[in-house]
Each structure stands twice: as C-alpha cells, then as structure tokens.
Amino acid sequence: MATPVNPFKMAQHQFDEVAEQLQLADNIRQVLRWPLREFHFQIPIQMDDGTMQCFRGYRVQHNDASGPSKGGIRFHPAETIDTVRALATWMTWKCAVADIPLGGGKGGVIVDPAGLSDAEKQRLCRGWIDQMWRNIGPRLDVPAPDVGTTAQMMGWMMDEYSKLIGQFTPGVITGKPLGGGGSKGRTEATGFGVVVTIREAAKRLGLDPAKCTASLQGFGNVSQYASKFFIEMLGGTVVAVSCWDRQDKTSYTFSKDDGLDPTFLMSITDQYGTIDKGKARDAAIKIEDSNAWMEKDVDVLIPAAIEGVVTKETVSLIKPTVKILAEGANGPCTPEADEVFKNSDIYVIPDFLCNAGGVVCSYFEGVQNDMNYYWELDEVIDKLDKKLTNAFQSVHEMAEMSSVYNRNAAYMVAIDRVVRAMQLRGWI
Ligand code: GLU
Image (cartoon, rainbow, N blue to C red; front, side, top):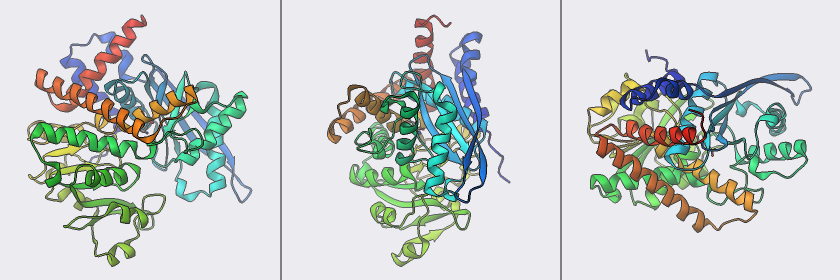
C-alpha cells in the first residue's frame, strides 16, 4: 500500500532541511514556510442542461518579494488546497532559480475538465476570473496554464479580465493562444527546457546524449515536447512513455525498444493526454502496466506527470542503468526517495530547475505584452536556452561548491535570491 503524499508537507520538509543547512533565521523561515495570501472561493456556473453547479476554486500567492506572483491554474478532480499551496511555493523557488523578476503563485479548481462541454469550460474560466479579478493583474499576480487547462482557456480568462477592468490587458495571464497575445514557443517551452537541462547534465557527466535512451511518465504537454526534443535536439531514443487512460481510469506504459515516434503518438492522443490503445497496438507499440515506465533499463528517467510518484515504495523499481532523473513534473519524488538518490550515482535535475522553461517563456510573453511587440521563434528559443543554461550552471556550481544534493543546491540558490529581495524591500 503506497503512503499518501501531502505535497505541501513535502515542500515544507524540503525547505526546512535547507533552511537548517543555511542556518536561516527563524523569522525568515516563518515568512517562507507558508503562503503570504490564499483565496478560497465558490464558482457558480450554469450547465448546458440549465442546472446550476458550484465549483470550488483556489488561488495561493506564496511570495511576491521579487515581483508579481506567477503560476498556473490547475483543473483537477483531486485538487486540494495543500496541493495548490505546495505548487505555489515551488513557483517561488522556480522563478528565483531561473532568475526572473516574479514571485510564486498557483490556482486550482476541483473539476474534471473532460466532463465539461466547451461552453461549460468557458463559463468556468470566466467564473474563476469573476471571483479573482480584484486580486490578480499584470503587476500583482499573473496566472497561466497547468494540468487540465489550455491556451484557449487562458484566452477566455484574459478576455473576462479585460472586460471587467475595461481595458485590453493581455499581460494579466500568460500561455495565451498565438494571435491572442501568446508568445511563440510557449507551448513547447517546458518540454524544451527539460531537454536543455538534460543536455547540460549529460555534459557534466561526460555522457553522449545521442547514445542515451529515455523513459517518461505522462504524455501531456511537458512529456510530449520533452520526448520530441530529446530525439530532435539530442539525438537520443525514447523507449517508453506512460499515460492516464480516461476510460479505464488507470495508466498504461507504451513502449518500443527501438524507439517511439512522439509525433505519431501525439497524432493518436486526445486533448486530455489519453493515447488510443488500438492504434498504438496496430503500430507495434507494446502496452504495459502503469509502473513499467519506471522499470526500464534506460539512461534517463523523466517523470513528467504529477507529484508524489517516486516514493519510498516505488524508488526500488528504478534500474541501475539510470544516470539522470529529470523532474519534468512538479514534486514527482518524495523526500524518502530523495534519501535514496542522495546515496546513489543518479544525477537528479530538481523539478523547479528542470521544468522552469514554461514560466521563463511566460515571463517573455509578459514582456512582449508590455511592449506590444512580438519576437520571432528563434529569438524566444535563444533567450530560453540561455536562461535555463545559466540556471543549471548556478545550481550545479552550488552543488559542487557546497557538496550538497542537487535539490538542496537549487533551494540554496533560490532561497538566497528571495531572501535578498525581501531584505532589499525592508520586509525582514
Ligand atoms: N504551470 C507552469 C509551471 O508549473 C507554468 C507557470 C507559468 O507559466 O506561470 O511552471
């Protein structure tokens, strides 16, 4: 029986460990252990059949010392306030490690978006803004897409906010569609960033990425582009991806020893990330159980789905061939799994470094919205690559210099920057 994981306890545990190592003063720990602000609200909407349904919504602003709070909105049936708190906290560290002038926030709604029509989704998005518009804004808190939300939804939310304040305000939200205030490269950005950090890790380990194999958990936005770029940019081979099956309410692993084609897989995946099993079988792709992705003899493991999957119980499934574990998801490894990694040769690329590509591109989107001038794709990609390479370098250097585990090194870099921002503003 797997231990249930409370992500916020996990986030606080990770912070406490590093706060202790840094001998951080108690008053600073108090500010950073909890979010600065939380909003809990109801979103009543009319369903297509004329009935009224009420959904529970959240927005958590963990810290905004470095700039407006930044982070996605999740639509998930199992959303909890503690999940949103954890994700908001990780956003603070993510923006700090990426060295962008933004703080950390996250939002959520308890809902399964797959059970809603497009019209209902639109009403729910507008309803979320109707409850929160007074407390978000380009200089206050800037939401974005996350699990269960899309570019189109961001477009509706931006429209609702603009109507309410009476001014076109694209900078209130990022991850918008192209042509609707979005940035080139934003869709691919998180997956691209994951691969940039793997490239940098491989360099430090003296590995030839073209000879590396990878296995990924999830086949949503992050995993789709991470697998594509792992092949296109690094020349590596992707042997397995897992995905959630909405009908069967379980996950499966799709594998092919001589390599999967992510573009083909994307063509047989629905908008919620469920791969068509029949079409996969026809293409000679093997279908295995949910944990099989973790048990592959690969060089690189990429958990890119949800939090709390590599646990005390599952960590032993990982094969000794694995050299890099790249956390595409937020919080996929529990502190107990970290204890195992600390004593192993696996190079862990911690989540808020590994998946920072999305928020860095969101930052670029906000900058373009402010200027009302939009960059070409190569300019975005070039800037993204530089930011992530620098972020990787600062974490790697910190880990070497202080002889600490990579996650702790990433926390050290991030905490130092946020504490400095709070000091400069006279908060502490
Ligand atoms: N939801 C993404 C994340 O967890 C992106 C956040 C953003 O772009 O603000 O990093």
